[in-house]
Image (tube, one colour):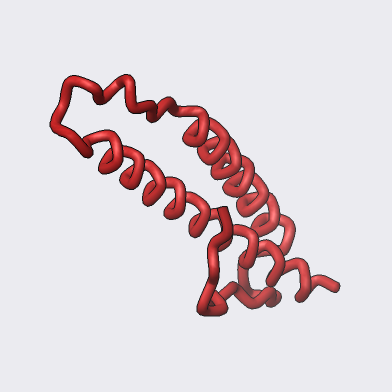
Length: 93
């Protein structure tokens, strides 16, 4: 699944008066790990036609689309974390 990002997200600027690079990096790495776990477990959630066979025709397709939308949202959150992390790491170098 590929997510097209159309905008550059605003990231914090490392400075003496702000949150330290180490703290920001630690928080973002932890956030990214949690998102990766959510993506992994979300993909593992079963969404199979047999589980919708006694409902109205097309119900499974709706459920499948809803799951895809949720997973797309998670991937957008993941992209946010990656961009934030990348931005602070670029400032550090």
